[in-house]
Image (cartoon, rainbow, N blue to C red; front, side):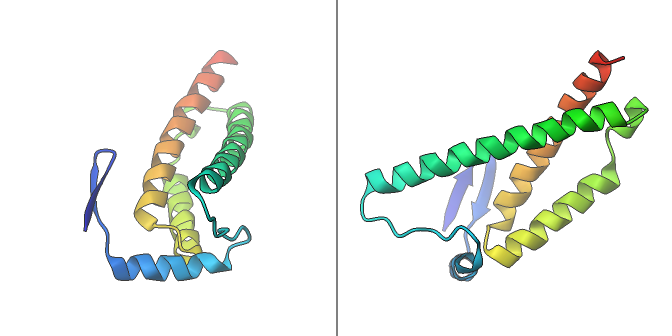
Length: 125
């Protein structure tokens, strides 16, 4: 089965899907079995609010990083980017998150964070 995700063509391997589903049983926030679409959508909305809260916390750390780093050229750290992505992929594999989705979201978020950090850095000079 092939699915378009944003601009990427992702081929879904159904055996991978089952493997990921099985691993998701191990996470701290188990997926509740819903009996209606309204119930499911309420749960997704609650989860989305939590994700946005965590993004705000991460953004606060980017602001601190801009304050702590002494030079603008230190904002982009390719080794750190690859380290973060490797850790994300390891954790995604451990808990059953699709690695393509996790990597795409994290690389986009990291790039946004670098640009945000540069803006904060420049505004404090």
